Image (cartoon, rainbow, N blue to C red; front, top):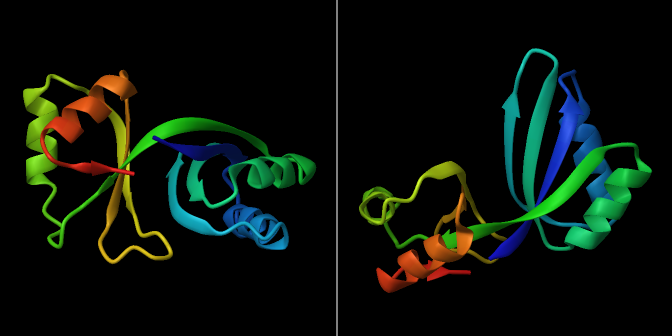
Length: 133
């Protein structure tokens, strides 16, 4: 499992750029990013190379952020998610959310997953031959 930064932000113009500027100033690299919005607030999920530095910098800039563990699954040369999703369904695992990412040295996509039982999901995926980072 890897650490993900989750920030709760006001849904307004420029807020994601402000966050990425903070991370750039803190010399934190962003490997993956996903946003979800509602009329007033949004959730920004990020995979970064320096989670502690990211949290500290975001807090100093006034952002509400925390970290949590997620599973990062290396996808094959194909971007076909069907085998992975089938393995999860067969294992009776519910996905809370997922998004794709490319790391700085990744040649294929990485799928970021969050489920109710992360350890069980990681073991299930490994037993089906998937590489969890």
